[in-house]
Length: 490
Image (cartoon, rainbow, N blue to C red; front, side):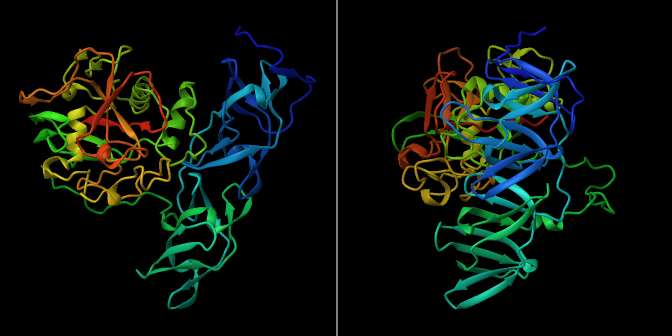
């Protein structure tokens, strides 16, 4: 039996357990893994926007503070719903090997409740906070007061499709109505009142909110049934693009840049295959599911917030572990072996990315081709524009921290943050360019460093150019370094 340290576990009387009994997995601070049943009806949580109780039937995971942080994260059964604050209970009550036990929260790294996610099927708004938290709720406030430059208006919440907020004091909002009207002005209400799907009511100051999306109010209770298919008999069914990914069709382009004299010599690269690439950089919300499931180290957010911000402080080795985890989760062959080599669908080492089926990091050539718009062959200085402020978070506008993904304009393929926000790991070893024409290029030459692309929130304008490249040790982590995923189209 796995060693259990008694300072971690306090035995209580072996009487009948009260409350719920939910299968769970606990990772302790000393790295022990405890399989048990959590026996609590609810937990109490306090956040910047109020104190509330959460019934355990709604809880998916509790992630306790790591070194350098004081915030507990609470994930629920509703996908992408996360709260941050302080757990008021001192102990997690559980049943372990027939014994009633209490785990002090200071000895626990995370708690995962072994329950299924639940999709939101309508009747709720999505509230997104500036800290990166987001949750679904019933809207209890009936009206919104907005002072514009041309008058004061009272808007019915029933007529709103989106509200986007800016500022802390006199909060500006851009309100989009169902009629198509857009209104910008100062919010006159001190609080917006909602009821969480778990039952608690919260009054949230507008200065804490990034956006409220009313589109989930209109979600159907069941999937839409189409009367006719999207293709005719005898035609191939259209390719279904994976969620939050973009199709990049094969073609050729010129790799490198001579404008700053750093990414030379130029060379022609041709792709004989199509590939998908992530529309956004991988976020904390996406990565947090992985590190809990895999028992990995929780990456620090430096106190800037998690949620929809790109994950940072992740090494190349951790990034490819995420890719393999995602492949296994979706029933695809793994893309990497334990040495970081590409694997084909039969599990054999390959140096040709077109043979790799599972999720992976893009090659440098794929990354730059996609950043330049793929077949569109954009030749902008940055990915999608010559105006850096349109498309990039960098040192002059980032407030010295990464920003939630997808807030700037995309490039012509619909890819966000290819320039700026965070540097992105690529699959390749880093090596100097050559002028030789290349097909399905991937630098598999063994070295000590892996390539990164795109620049980050702390970079200057020169270092978020499309062609910019740098490299780090595969074990290196930093607060402006993340990644996005890629897949070869079968």
